[in-house]
Length: 160
Image 1 (cartoon, rainbow, N blue to C red):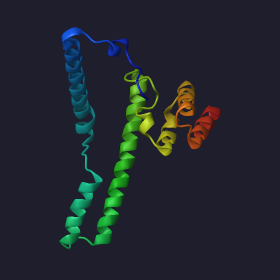
Image 2 (tube, rainbow, N blue to C red):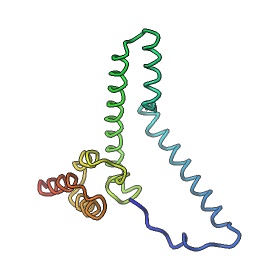
Image 3 (spheres, helix red, strand yellow):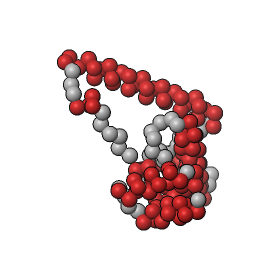
């Protein structure tokens, strides 16, 4: 969800000192966030990041050396990527829930909403309160207006 422009974004100061200070603070905040992510999420959970291409490359190499068959290599790539997607979805749901419980970060109930597929949005609705569900429903109607998401939201709201 795009963030609204602040009043200071439209004005300029002489010498550019304000923008330099702001960009320094922004990079500090970004590095602090990256460090927190690394120390509080990635290391404790033992996470690694591998692209589908890298996984495919390693298994292609194993198949070329006769260590596994080509079809087994392809099945392994598919399974690893599917499991990685599931774990990522679970991690994001947990992070959303924790963020909402402490009132940190952006105020919209689902982090990165605009980039999520309808299925991903639907998977996160169980964790939301009725006011959060209504907020998501209103946003969805004004933007993507996906019928499957709206139906799932209405179903959640009537179940509560």
